[in-house]
Image 1 (cartoon, helix red, strand yellow):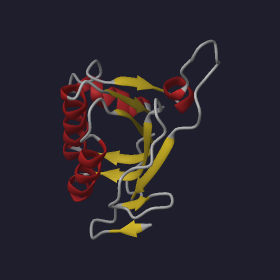
Image 2 (spheres, rainbow, N blue to C red):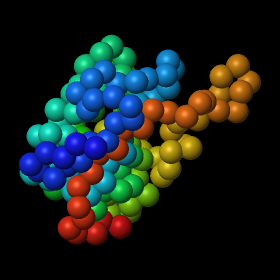
Image 3 (tube, rainbow, N blue to C red):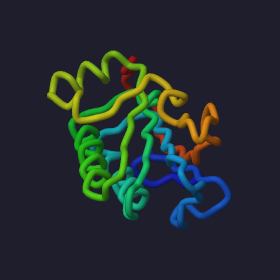
Length: 151
């Protein structure tokens, strides 16, 4: 686990935090976020997400269920990653069971800009040739300490 000055922790399995992302073909990359997405964490999170969306056709799932606070800088991060993924003919899905987060996205007219599911099984399982689902996705865990409850 690496921790930077903003308190955003990035955990990656079996490699340096700055190395290439291990990835199974035809599987989404799942980024599980915890804590706050605000002005203090927006820049390092943006840099991490930019790296994950730099290739062609990125398939990214942002698991926001552990997010406790998001401000306009955090919404800007979500919009930026959406635009990058869309420009590269990829797919972005958000996972959130928070009525507050969904309400905030609706309030700023972004609820239809994102594909949102309540849980990972809704976004990561994909039937393949009659199979009932896909293998486990790659997980990247990024987080900071909680300040304000979103749920």
